[in-house]
Length: 159
Image 1 (cartoon, rainbow, N blue to C red):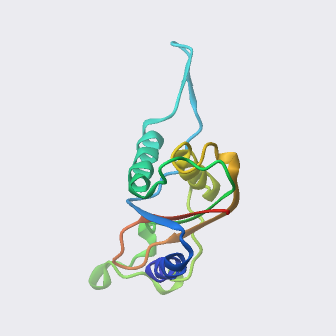
Image 2: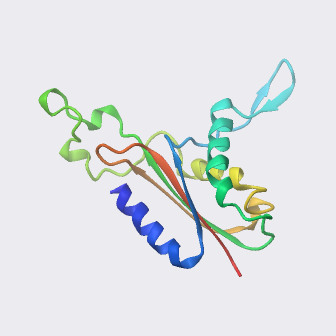
Image 3: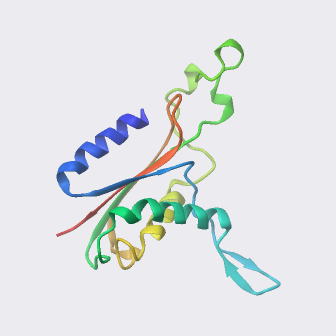
């Protein structure tokens, strides 16, 4: 199902001049900054920092020469790994149980935190500041059978 969504996005973007890119791997939400009591400093957890760098690395080849100062729109599709209890065992191991095929992806992480990570990663690369993003759509789904998780992003600029 998620590959079908990606195909729809890619088809829509080809004609519109929108920039699209894909980040392989399990999407990671932006974690809240932490405070170190001993050094009295604030830091971003390593997993969030590495995920932000992965998004930025995937987006950099398609980035404009200069970040825009105008209005921006961002769509992101986050495909997540299914929990183990969604799968059968025994001779049907690896197949998704019927009752879980169309289950929404509620998971442990909030969709908006995944989106915040993408917006922060594109800051200074596609736009000067993420407050320029006026149109946003974030979608979170489970990957299909045999698929690996990924994040698919599209960015467009108002003229």
